[in-house]
Image (cartoon, one colour):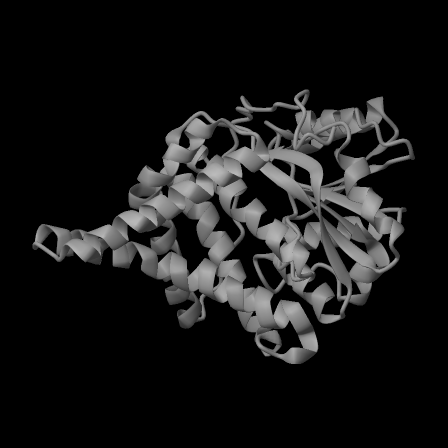
Amino acid sequence: MLIAAFNEAKVIGGTIDAVLTTTYPNDIEVVVVDDGSNDDTAAIVAAAAAADPRVRLLRQPNRGKAAALARGLAAVNHEIVVTLDADTRFRTDTIAHLVEPFADPKVAAVSGHARVGNLGSFIARCQALEYISGFNLDRRAYHLVNCITVVPGAVSALRKSAVIEAGGFSTDTLAEDTDLTLSLQRLGRSVVYAPRALAWTEAPESLRGLARQRFRWAFGTLQCLWKHKDMVFHPRYRAIGLVGLPNVWFFQIFLVAFTPILDLVFLASFLLGASQMLIIYFFLFLLMDLASAVAACLIEREPLRWAWLSIPMRFIYRPILGWVVWRSLYKALQGAWVRWGKADRTAAFNYLPQLREVHGED
């Protein structure tokens, strides 16, 4: 197992404890790369290593997450490498579900199923709904046509030899997980989805924290799209080139950027006495959002009341994401470089239904 950590003292101990309780029957090692932390991260990991020989601590000056992952990958002794973020909690069976698909030698990477583990604010609850109605539904669909565009660093597993063949963890983008996934897809390697490999991650609780995180994500995605632009609509790359990457451009960039603007047009038209048909169209869009959220809640067995968040999300949450994309585009056109930065941690995990049946498959 591989964890890159920078100033993660609030959460790293709980993350290590969770993975050490795994029911996975084979031997595991937990390699934590401390990327120049200036808090107690290294001390906490060192204490865990002293208490359990399966834990190893590597330290390096601050060079960024991708460099830390590259250092850790070189140090692990196993061919199958499970990656997780320092703020992520695994179920006891998560590792087993991540590793299972590698029985097929063609599989190079496996994406797990991430959820939000803290619901302490409106912003965090919006992200909880976004994860199940957006990210995870998308990944299910992409899996069906073999065009997964990102194996998330929060919960994934990689075949070490395939990662090395693809060039390893590149440091030239902020989205090293997306970059690596596309590099594996470029080689024609199989990238699959394991919906039973569940993990809970800490989401930003504030507008500021959300904007900072999503700016890094959007900027990194734009970097990856530009780096792999030759794959778009190229028949050589099959589904990833014809379906996956065009969908990223349309749904993660274009639609996110322009939907809030269109909503403003609808609102202005309503105030200026627009035709009744235009208003009907707008409410149909709201109903589509609600229906998608209801379907996601039913699939994920989450409370249906979550679906109602889709309505205020359209007017509060999505404009933030739209602004983030426009800012990322502006910075990218300027040729600016963006540091990965550090997310604020609270360790406020208050939604970890680990003992509950999920998907009816446990």
